[in-house]
Amino acid sequence: MKITVIIISLFLYLVSANVLAQEEISKTWVADLGNGNYKNPILYADYSDPDVCRVGDDYYMTASSFNCIPGLPILHSKDLVNWAIIGHAIKKMPEHAVFGEGVNHGGNVWAPSIRYHKGEYYIYYGDPDLGIFMTKTKDPAGEWEPLVLVKEGKGLIDACPLFDEDGQVYLVHAFAGSRAGIKSLLAITRLTPDGKKAIGESKIIYDGHGIDPTIEGPKFYTKNGYYYILAPAGGVSTGWQLALRSKDVFGSYERKIVMNQGNNSVNGPHQGAWVDTSTGEDWFIHFQDVGAFGRITHLQPMSWKNDWPVIGEDKDGDGCGNPVLTYKKPNVNKTHPITTPSESDEFNTNSLGLQWQWHSNPKAWWYFTNKEQGCLNLYSVPLPDDYKSLWDVPNLLLQKTPAPEFKATMKLTFKPDNRFKGEKTGLVVMGLDYGVITFESAENGFIISQAECIQADKGNKEKINAQVNVTDATVYLQVKVNSKAQCEYQYSTDGKKFIKLGNTFQAREGKWIGAKIGMFCLRPVKGNDGGHAEIDWFRIDK
Image (cartoon, rainbow, N blue to C red; front, side, top):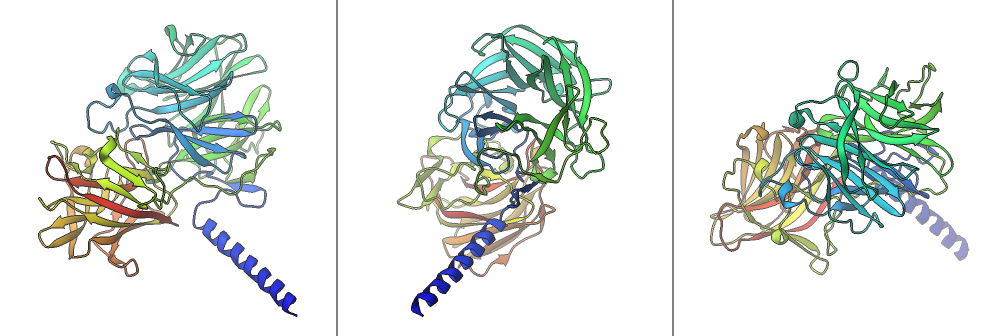
């Protein structure tokens, strides 16, 4: 009898544990439906301009990072549906790429490509102000080599190499109208055999001004004797996906629309990557622009018809597919457990979680993590000389805004410098507009404020909506974000009772990126030292 009771109790415990595990998983956006199917987006976060390569049974993705540091995130998957962040290819931008100590909003790393060639992984990207850069490594989760300027030039963007079978190396790229003075063109240049330098001038191989305006984001491939360039046109939120093909690398190229929105909720759909599986299937990863939540990542089935790719579902058989919302998962040799990129951070290690990025090149003294202490120390950084708002502040420690709705809570203890008042820390949702809840040192304790800055990118200043005085140095700051990106800010002194403060804030996207969420620590005066905030944890619940 006792054995039976023990067995039944163990069974009930395992069932309960499994339910709890499923509830924990359900708090996050999960693309893997667990029944052999998946739903789009596969990543409900701002991994814009994604590109993917396969090596054996492993898939590696990178995406645009613009001014955010570390840059060029590296994600890994075994099945193209479940992804985890494993590192970054850029720890710091070259000093000549950040233009002083400010924030180069929307600059630096545009639309990268990742390729594997002779035992090494290569990433190319365009910096719209400087030219095309490359970095490489033998271990995508490890250290990447210093950046190399492959082709200098203003307005050269969206670069992708092709390591041809005959040993030749080529590079296709687009043009940024804001810098180059012209757009809607694609060009190809030769590279040296090591892929480090362009040879001669680029040759225009496609003009999209007539029927494919704003063609950009090209990806370069070969198959069955053809050179293929897959590229979007028509604009980020309104465009279509093209395929160009030619028997000669420098053209001329035939053109065909191979995916468009059709009668579908997936607007765009915009640039991405063709990737095959070791079992012989073809897939296409692209993004969709959803405003404040950024450019989210989709996975589409892909097939070939008369030497043209067909992306998505082609129900009418015209060779042009439409995006799928749910579909059977890729047939791969190995599968991941259900996995999503990291969001919450307990700060119990000697490193920041891989989800965190600064708004510009960080200085070594801005933060300190220590697993023995079990918290993140954010040291107060003097405000910039021309300070107007947080838009100008480089020491914002942020991550991508998860979706479609979530709650972010951080527990902190503030230890300001007693020599002056006005040091502050806080929780911010950052974009062209931003909303924030701050915790500031005052004459008699602390002030918690909820504020917002509308059109921060235009130089406007913050407006304080509400304030409250508290005496506790330890507080909990929280923001709730709904599916319309509307934000409500709350605070607590005990972690149990949360009190709403201020107005509902409508989040907006940033400069080419989705809104980001995170923290900061600032002081109003310069000097040799200041206080700091001890961030115990930062948690995302959905």
